[in-house]
Length: 492
Ligand code: FUL
Image 1 (spheres, rainbow, N blue to C red):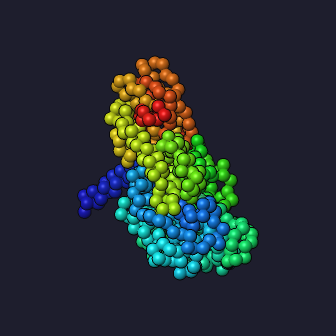
Image 2: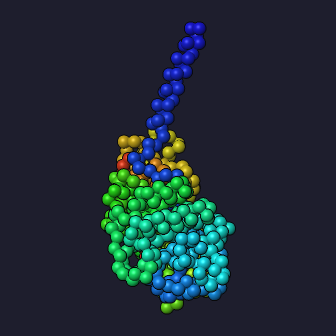
């Protein structure tokens, strides 16, 4: 008995010691971290928007709501062509304007006559939302939907009854079309419109009118895994401009209670806040053309591959997700110029990020967590985003040296934090050297987050020093990337 009791005691003591050891070993998370769904969303990096409605045929950006549905008459409509173009351009999700401010519905909603069911499209038998989700699934893209809260067609807009209408439409969209990955709530609200023939100006108080909390609860009850976008989250937030630019400093953390849908401080949205209490992914929306909807007059104004690349560095390269709009034309096709530009963009990205010169090379660090292999600086160069370098808890600044063995010419750098542990790094700088004696500062910055891309002039060096100057809690990085940009980027 005695021996058994002693054995029992020894086992208990050794289990509790191991637990204590493991506690110290594993990296403590920051106070605010992304949900698994937010993490998966961020990893998509580039997603797309499809703005298509009566505006495409009236050549407008904001339809008044008095359109005759008979004008919705695409001549060569092919939804798969949109999705194929997006897929080839590397976009991982597409969001369709199921209803824009004009109130025209791309699906045969039972709650309104202002829809495809009264258009010549497929003799009123068409359902663009259905075709869209089917095509997305066929090409392996996630499907998202935009349902404009502002409705310039509906007679009840501005009154409580409209909320029932709006929510009924959400129920249709979120119960009849399978899994929807994202729902997009636009902050643009109220103004003049048709409103069932009233032809007047209707203003609403965007802080109270929509009772967003109940609408969000309804959405999540219908699709628990869906991500909700609005100016203010709760899952994905606007970055305060429509150029696709996140701030140079960009925190996924922000205080959601400082945000109002349709009325937030754009500069606050553009940076977030280091100590923000909520994790809201920054989504950088921009159109491939000047307008959100197709206008033939803008066929020559499609953003070039290089312009799109610049946006990529300012969105994905600053810890955001790029949401690029591709508007179908009056044929119901994404215009050839847009398709070509998107293809060119993807091609440049592939050429630039094809080879990471740091991959498999040697790295050392001023500190790594308890001297354990699990957190050694080599993890930065192992091409595995799941493994990472991290310091001891009390070490908030550190230095990493990457040895490329031979001189290497490069002009693009990448740093990535394992954000499932939160966004921790607040300030960094990067230096390069040929010989280990003379070091030149080549970059500096504040936030890193999911991905930080840095463009430098053309440099040749065999050593790189990454200085983490400030982090809270202790810093961690999973990848250092060193690249040479595509020649197309260097010789425009
Ligand atoms: C804005 C809207 O007013 C534009 O028409 C477009 O849909 C853009 C994405 O959001 O608020």
